Length: 296
Image (tube, rainbow, N blue to C red; front, side, top):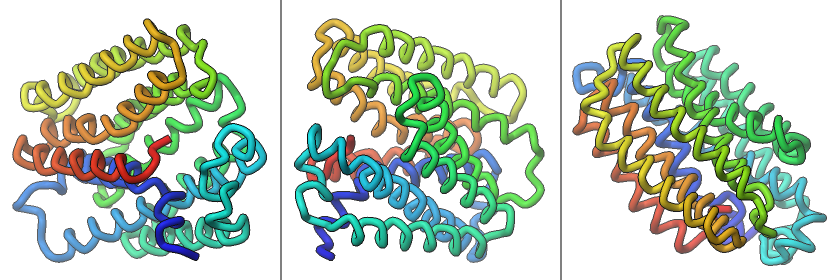
């Protein structure tokens, strides 16, 4: 198995955004502050980051495993149909990544382990069935990200249950991205992108609601939210005006990478602007990797 092929199939730029989910969840739980960051907490953060790398990587690998027949026609350049990895090698890689994720999560806590298992099941459900359903597919994909955010929150053993409602927001946004991606290789999805823009706007409302019911500073988060919303709105509007595959795929790519400023918004509001800037520093890393490896 060649390392380059393994990196290609796991989409490293996307994995960076999954790490940002975990850091956002940790911030929501109140553990991304200097007063709390002792050696034990840092070790748990590392384990949760390892878990999300395995979960996201494994999910992406099995996405390509299940899509092999369609990719032979629509995406022959992808790793499996191009012969860079055999189907068996890809399956083994996906299973290894999932095993790594589950073990790392259970090393944090039983609750973290169960959330990781739920995330894995949700990812496999999407890969095999969900993506083919126009309504449930986007929700299924969004659930994977919502659970990933909760995986970060699981670092706190006594977190109040109402905090888990915040996991609805990434469900909405990833649903928006998935809607945008529908028919990305063919175009003609203006209505889906328009609905995605409505979901994006609903997330802004969601952050305002968070500021009303949780110890969240909307003032700290404002500039990060503005950045996130602005780049998504611009990309989606272009994809609506000129509804061609190239611009649709670009809007999807921007949507995926913009998860980092979205997660920085959580961190700014629940932790500090300094910590949010550190999370935002993941964006240039993800952008660099997106030039070397595919995002969609």
